[in-house]
Length: 355
Ligand code: 13P
Ligand code: SF4
Image (cartoon, rainbow, N blue to C red; front, top):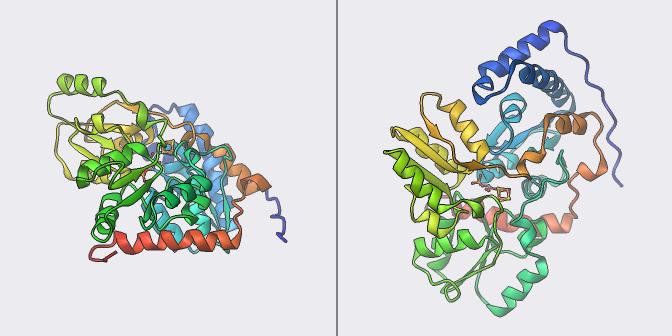
């Protein structure tokens, strides 16, 4: 039986400590993102307390790049795309993990660390892709296509992962599917329809015959409008347009680069274009603006309500008085089953490894 985690109360920062913390947040670029002095002061009080309690709890805080800027710059120990976060969580040397992201990411951290406490501050932080499919759906598809390996996007629950052969992320889906197709005539790809169609096109595979795709959609990326993208290209000559791989094939056909959030940041780092448009969740644009203050970013983004559900108050709450619903609890047998396809991803994502 689980022991209850005892409550802790963060001390109050002194005026000098508060001012040093506000200075740190200011230097990280929050004011350039539109945070007022009062906003920064309010955040500083919370980030100071969180960082104090984080050390006391021996907790690590991973944050996805779509998280609010005050989380990314104020309390995160490491940030990244889904792949990088999974890799870093697999080697995290802490007693517990307080995950700033969405449930499937926290579950992945738990699967890779079954003996650690993993906490999700915002219990409502789901994902429309993850919610689009059930384990029974996967079993039905597998029965319809015997022998076809199941490649599953990481944006899925532990139950779906446990039914899969290999997990993929936006950073490695094409590499892994290419390897699967070198050994199999047909591959099942779940659950993102848009990403599946983009992969089919990139790999020259016929949807419905060679690649079997589920009908899940990301409520953020599915709603970008191709006509606006075309208009912006005319308005900003020389702009480099980058889109997340969850966008529609129509939109993807109009952009300069398609990939995951990590790939998009790498592209911006290496390019010397006059301006960039990042067609994805707004958090990535905020991060790009603070990381590359000398570059110009044309606004075109949408907020993910799930990603933005986490706030500093929730993180402090989980460190002070963790509540049972915030704990990621997965049966050990489920962790064991779901871990194998994640480890398969780690193997296949590395160059030179065969399927
Ligand atoms: P990345 O792995 O590219 O960061 O994507 C995660 C996600 O949820 C995209 O909507
Ligand atoms: Fe899920 Fe889309 Fe939000 Fe990413 S942006 S967490 S895919 S709903």
